[in-house]
Amino acid sequence: MKQLIAEGVLNPGDKLISEKELAEKLQVGRSAVREAFRALEAMGILEIRPGGGTFVRRVEPQELIDVLSLVLIMNRDTTEELMELRKILEVESAGLAALRHTPEELAQMEEALAQMEADINAGELGEKADWKFHYAIAEATHNSLLVELMNTIAGTMQRVLRAARMQLYMTPGTPQRLLNEHKAIFQAIKEGRDQDARRAMFEHLDKVEKVLRI
Image (cartoon, rainbow, N blue to C red; front, side, top):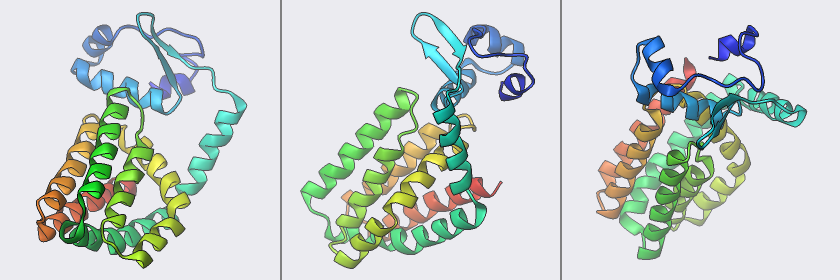
């Protein structure tokens, strides 16, 4: 679809054929088409109008600037280094959070997960809820230096989270997989299974890193 837009076959304002028709034409499931629409909507390429259909969006100059900013922050070296740092900080954070969390901190994690799920259902990226979840885990370690480090990289991490989700969402089924991975981390923390929490966090970050290397 992006290629058709780039080639001028589809233009701003054009209405796309229905999910059912496109699924039949491409010989894929309707769920795959639906997730592709949501991903492209989150990227600002499509506009889904309830009851009205799906249209190619007209991109404004400021949106182009935002996209260019995302390209810059997706510099491979910066992204790889950030993912390395996240493994260093967050794998152990998950283990400590499993041992030290309070009911209030668990509630914050649950709230972030609920928001993440709502964002996914609405076809949004959910990067803010993603950050809130990981930050709540850091707070649950009760290590002030660790929380300070998370605050230091907060701006960069949130921007990369957004760019990463834009890339990850191009693969059908990814939004739900990401949500399930976060839920597995939460469940291990909630039940005090520190080794399982570390393992779940490492596997989650490792999968994200591998996708971003493609």
